[in-house]
Length: 291
Ligand code: NAD
Image (cartoon, rainbow, N blue to C red; front, side):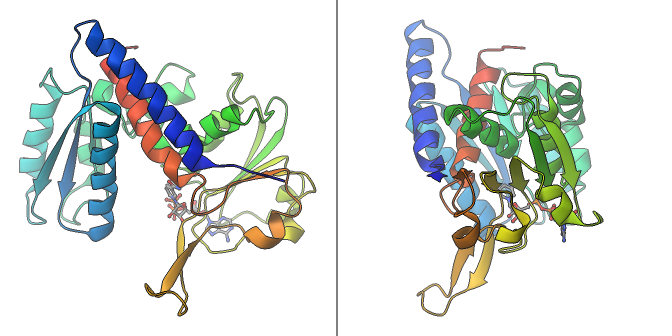
């Protein structure tokens, strides 16, 4: 069994991005610039955004954090988005989700200029993904295909079972894995909460991508010998032996599934660290105006 080291690959990708940034600046071009909008003071969102800002500094990007109180109106947020859409210095930006209930996330996402939507959530970018056109692929699925690539894991003609159909992970993941590209070309089965006999599907899978949000959901009896296991789940489970009172576990029962798998991502340290590297990569694509 090979443990897929997302932390290591993420740092490798960030070093490669930093080199490209040096090259861009040496050629006298503008420093790539990522902006982030954060509404409210949710601790998890603050941590995510702070990590993104820190990662920008590490690779030599300019970064701007724009904060609003939870009470901000939808109109005020839309005005800021309009400003960012028209600011030539900003190559790409993100709006950290979730937003307060009085603000329509869909309306906000649709207001982002697709060419600056480095999270890849705008319907235009999702549509481009479906049509196999150059686009910003949302960070988590993009991170997963890069892990598969860096570990030279064969995908062509393989059967990939994706569990979960969310807009940010499962659905784009299933589209990506089915694409006619060197990074994918799988036969894909997309399973979800209404799938009957899930185990029949997973037992036939060469690659399982679990994005469910239920701790230890995928067990050894559901997995074929030698399967590749990608665990997207990040779940808090109580652990009184730890000072913080909880630990993070994935959607896969790691101890038993790892014994049957050929490759597996740990939680933490697998898919998670790739998310930031993918966002930076999308920002670089935006700065280079590749499409
Ligand atoms: P979600 O709640 O939006 O979607 C969960 C999906 O699981 C749904 O489509 C549902 O149909 C499916 N599901 C639920 N119960 C099921 C069952 N019994 N059988 C089969 N399918 C079932 O969640 P999400 O946003 O896609 O996130 C999934 C997990 O991935 C969460 O733990 C989340 O924290 C984690 N996540 C991790 C990263 C990362 O960077 N590693 C990024 C995003 C999400």
